[in-house]
Length: 298
Length: 184
Image (cartoon, rainbow over all chains, first blue to last red; front, top):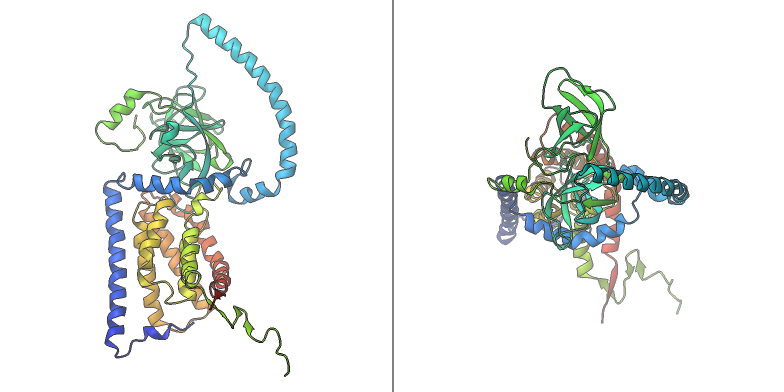
């Protein structure tokens, strides 16, 4: 399509000026953007409030959609999830029957466990979740992996709190709005979680690679003891995450660790729990030098 | 007197008598659709990797290429700002990239005033590739070859989906120009 005629200004002084002003304003817009960008690199927390407010405004829409998403994985499977809802439902009900039985067994075991623990005089370290929320969205077109959950300051959510699902760790709260919060997912490259092998004390860091997998880096270098299929859980070091939350399974062994598959794929997660920060002192120590939402190193 | 055909005073945009375009619809619809496109993060698709194309940006490209002059040159500022609220990118990257894109298209248009489908697609593809790569670089994520490979499926999907988005925008353009306002 040809450009509209009014842009061909000819000798019309006023039109020429108008066109020029358009370029100036657009250029100023770009400069304004660059300035904002510099500010957000130097002081990343500057725009948190604005963004939280915007997220609060849009979160009801996200919640409506999230209600129908259970049992879906990823983009195409999310679509398939809607499509196969009926047969999926029947299948789930069968599984539910079995699960009820298992649940009863587990309950019995839990009681026995509690009794034995009481005998041994051990403290029960079951943490109560701060809030139970829905995972309502994620930045699906940016390289950053940030999710949105439907609970905020009104529900007691604070930045830094770990977010878990029944299958494992999901991430941690980055910013808390009034009714919604932004969650740094484990697969974000800024996310770093201290983990250990479930069977022994091989400690490592799990870093996101923003492609759905994590990179495990061993703290003690030397002979790499990780084997394929090893399960890694949080080690509790650093103090944000309580120990023994499942994180990932090693898939591919590398020189200094492994590439691991996330256990709690956020795509298949509907309801998440926001847990309290495990050790408050660690957080205070973390906040004292700079209020940076980074994972504790060590 | 012979009767007129009932469709004689109508065209695809509605009756030509007693009806006119609605300014709010005609000028507001592009903005509204682009803003809705920027809300993609609220779709119930939680992806572990970036897979969805940047719909807000693509809609802006499509409107701009279809109707030169409909979006003012400074439209990148408000549209990018809104996109920044939800995209997860560092604040300001949307403002910068949306503004630069509109200026770039303006310059391309001066060079190629008459365009066809293929030229539009090539323009959009080139701009989308540059946009996604720069957005990844600006995202503040640690980038290695792995992360750059991560955006490849997204790049491909965006480029392939652009004609679909452009066709959608062409349909919306018809809606935009419907004569819905009653005169007199």
